Length: 295
Image 1 (cartoon, rainbow, N blue to C red):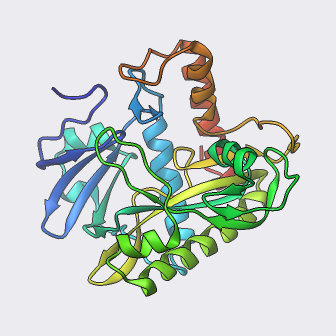
Image 2: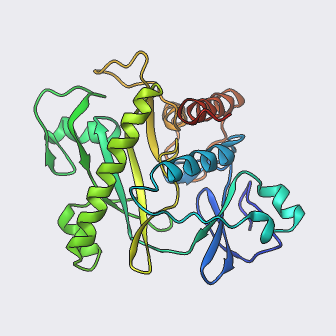
């Protein structure tokens, strides 16, 4: 059965559907990725879409791909949608689809944490460490860390959950390739530091984020999405106060609603009320406007 709010293109064969993306085969070397308006929370796709979400994620990722191209190659191409899609298909996915090189994804998520929030805050309270990395005593919730932490995780398949792993486990996951693991770590930290510094000038704190990488003829390549409200924790700089949770521009607002609703985090997820949908859409659009100047 086709998922809700999925694209239905006739010009290209469907390769697979992720939680929020539909991927089509262009040819042996290229894919077409459609960012849908679906929203995933706690590894479950919600039954209610967020208007314009796919357009926001596509525009924001494209902005960051362009801004970070001097640091690391990415999977974007200059091929036009018009060259592979019929007019009807083009109208369906305009502004939320891109044609990319078909890279071999690395089986991990490259997570960088600059502030103590979410699961990192929970772990710190219990163990004084995050993902096995010890931290100074006395840090508060939402406080900036002394240095950004690289905390990789597995990339779960199906309904499984991601699992945090050590650097040594990451090396093993990459077939013992220590040099590649170090390159992923160092690039992730560099990307985060430069993006976080830029975002601060635009009034946004990037508390944490995840990157995904692939190999293109042996060359490391940034893939998937980058520095979006779906892959990052964005806080407004105005009013930032350590010692408590922060308001956010990302889907944390939806997570908070779902937790308060009493949902047990097992499918099916409950529908979102109209006011939560509109507030979430506003947050995504505002993050795009502040970071890129686009509307």
